[in-house]
Image (cartoon, rainbow, N blue to C red; front, side, top):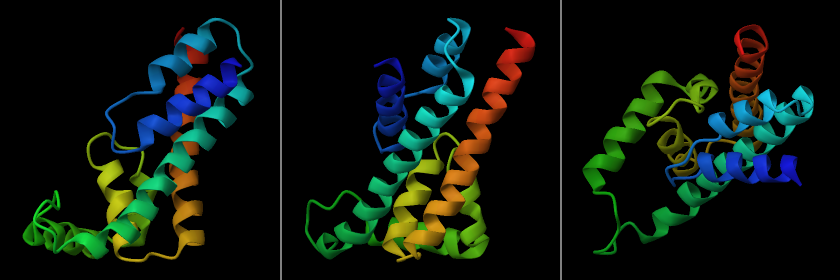
Length: 140
């Protein structure tokens, strides 16, 4: 049940909701839970949460002409230009605070191939959680 909770914490943290799964992961690590299962749960949840962002980015653009649409055309165009400037490899940084969630959303709006998106995002997020667990094993 603990690993499932971490999965959902990672999932929610990867969506556009403000949340953090790192503190929860570190607390569970310190309590003696199995590190590779912590890594798996956090990485899987966080990656799948980013997939939700990708899907929303892909689908929500149909509604961009509505008055209530939360992003202006200029903001959307600027974000798309930034993504194109740095390219698909920027998805390896989808784990970063503040920019990571919008990055996955924009990737969906630009119709980045899902399989490539998934692999790059999973690698970046998996490396981040692995680094956290490694550092925790050395310093906690």
